[in-house]
Length: 113
Length: 116
Image (cartoon, rainbow over all chains, first blue to last red; front, top):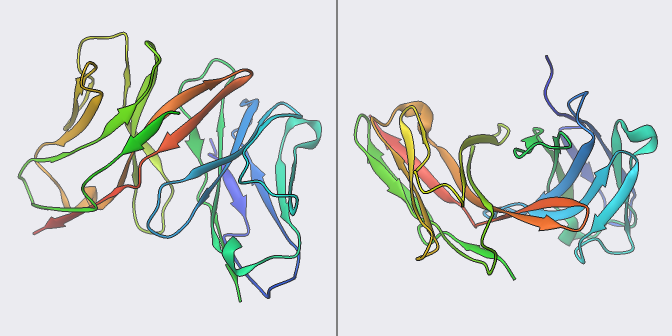
């Protein structure tokens, strides 16, 4: 049994570059969430998918951010033209349709130089 | 808007002793879920315990228990017989129901240090 996995675990990039992160949820989970966690803070909700449909987006998700979940399986989060303020841990979580608990992945730590 | 407040940035406890982490929240809903998540250093976040608001009985999971005071909107976590492995960041979270699903709102977290 595998939990939520995320790739890469760490990413260092230069300001202005594009980056893409991947999340693989628990296989039977049809709900997938992205959160962002800055140093010393709790995670903040970014966006939510049910199957392949993106049903909720936070105001934190600027135009430079885009998330997809083709075929309702894995999801990608892309950040275009990265800024230093994008440096954070990006967490993915998944849950079943009737599930109460969200299961979190290990996160991708992004550092923008 | 629902908010979650953890007023203790850092707590310390001696091994085998008991510690209580505080959490307050603000909501106008009558039925909701509250959670405590643990995030060890460089490791993923895991659920410690959850509480359904309609249940009057406080949740318990082995050494972990909560004191849920609905009227006061308070949700504290008690860790008994603290162990070195309990050292982590602890987050209190409230589940918000959205039109097509739900999301979690987290507090800022409390770092728990366990001294041997």
